[in-house]
Length: 186
Image (cartoon, rainbow, N blue to C red; front, side, top):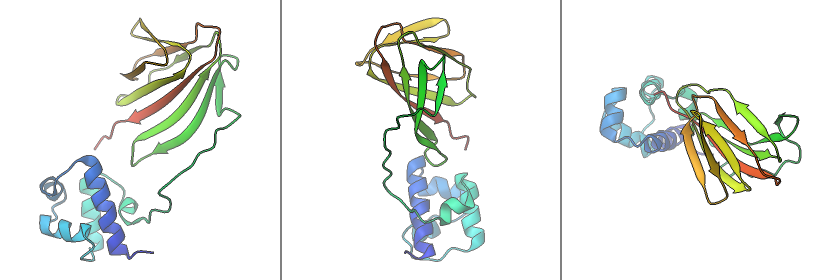
């Protein structure tokens, strides 16, 4: 187990790099000097509670995200036989692979569309984007009254704040991988 100051340093560095921020930007947003931030990231100093709060507020993250110990670096998920949710009389089946993670801002699903599946999705909140990879089969996705027919060689991404529809117009099953990205408001 690593010391708390090393943990804080690793978490600050990971979050700063994920955001693509320089020491200048983080110093400006937090009011903590670049030199202090550098020493914190290197685990060379024990920050005060006030300093950790200032960094958390400046990074727009929770206080606990800066002090938490990463417990697992790797997560292995087994394929489920039973879907988490079904729609359209079982013709549209949704399997949650990775739930929403506030650090990454996304969640991952597999969607299976049986022949004849026709799923209408309500608009999602502003800032939500869908990234869809067709793993097998073919899908027709309708957005803004325009339909995009995709097969295994195609992918699509779109702003999901409008009604959208997934259809399997073929006689074979279609498998999609969906990544739902929730834009960071910070």
